[in-house]
Length: 160
Image 1 (tube, rainbow, N blue to C red):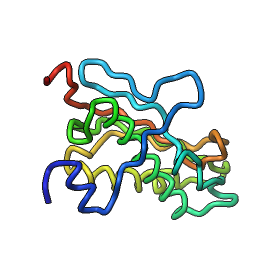
Image 2: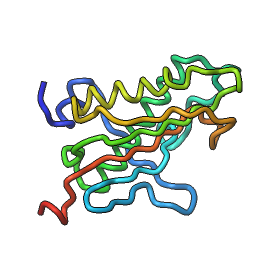
Image 3: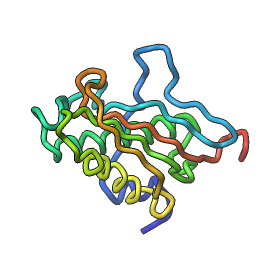
Image 4: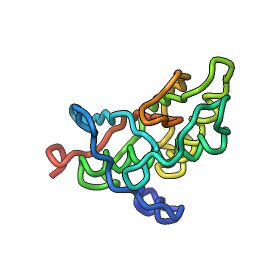
């Protein structure tokens, strides 16, 4: 297995989606000295949230885990577009996962583990990260999961 994220994505049979375009007044990524802050990503496929629902009510863990994987791929796509290449992404620092769930659902970490595991498969040891998994009452567009990323990257300004 190679160390390049692009090669690992190919080995996994994954293709990054087109970066999501914000519907509201924010930018998908900001950066400061090579640290990228990726806005919360919903599980959009072709511009639409295709997996919806609330954990503990009308959605199972496996479906929510798939939504978490889609969110991570969206986040990586936004970060890669910001710096010009997925291979310029260096290290995942932090993941914050929000899970729409009922008050009696307590497996938010199991849902977000799917995102963490995928980041490890794509970035290897550099994909290991600090993390929070938070239960919330609702998310935009009835999404079951929203994920924010903080990562480091070689920026064109820093490494021409």
